[in-house]
Length: 556
Image (cartoon, rainbow, N blue to C red):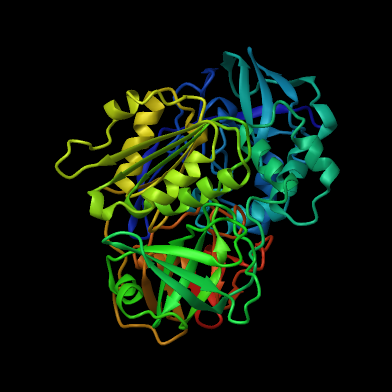
């Protein structure tokens, strides 16, 4: 039996490296050091992380990888050059196999004590470091991820120190099992319940397992792709906003939508998304559209009652959550549409919650839904209303204005409007003591990008067709970006096409493991190459490893 031992202590500070046409800030290059180093609460002396959102911190202070796994990859990858620190690990150890070490295990190494918190994060930078892009997926599928430690007691550690286990973790869930439970199919619900009961498990992993126990963050939509809905009513709400009522052509009730969701329309080849402003559970859908572009101009000037519009099912996670705490509905301009649906829901439930309706518009001519919102608020026993008109009235909504409204800091807040408005109001609410976790925002356009480690000083660029000759393959529509381009066979994935178009994207592993790039597929079909470790639901797509099989519409 191998005596667990710390073979090598490896550290390295973050640096910028070139990757494709980008610059990545990363601390994955680690080098063995001689002599002891202090293991402190956040890391080893002389060590650092380039992306504290995904690495480092108390729960990921020290990364551990085993010599046995290094030797395994030397053979599998035909890479005899792989040595200590090459997997980005701080501790290269012998023993402590991933299928033996459990989350919550505690170990004494040198003068310090540690606790196992989670498997390694599936990050593309490991593939970058070793020149093997699919390595994050291989570590998961081969059940050799490595793991992180929390520092319970600071102290000096060094190569040659013996590793002594001082406590076994509850439920005896090994690193390999926890890793597979998150990333691989065939999950056991009982073990999911055990996982969220392990106190040492990092909060992010606990949250992911709770989502799995709840059935996932996204519900199945009412129908797939686009279907024709008939226009039954057109209403002028203000000088700039028109409402369109949509119904099933055969008169049957439409599936209910959740308050705050949106639908996507395909009009004359263009795709746009609009929030629903109708009462949830209504047999028809109402969208309310501000005139500010080609498609909205068509909806304002050319659309007629009786016309049919291709429509994708309601979707979106900006929805009113149940609870007893106060509710703040804060909007600007046409941003009132999703929070108006929430107000309808609260009124339909005869809610006893304290409800604050705070809305700002440019002037009285552009103020929409004032009478409708006022009537709904009158049905609620604990409702408050504040309206602000910014043109010529000195009524611009600001942090100082919010501070004078007496808003309850315990409220859940739902914000919708231009991005600058939501950014300013979110900061102001946090300054007033609101819990950031209770602030919910809805973006009109592209989602916020999540590209860990990528540094950029360039100004944001509007989405555009990719450089070079146009493709000849299927059409790819980025619905939120309002862009349609043709696929080229030389593209590695839908993700790389989106990046070439400067469409904001979200990703981490880039190999079909982490599901950070999962995106609603509004229309069309895709193929996977390579096959992900676990496919998403039938209405979603993993951008990082998919190609279009035919014309596709992505909610991106």
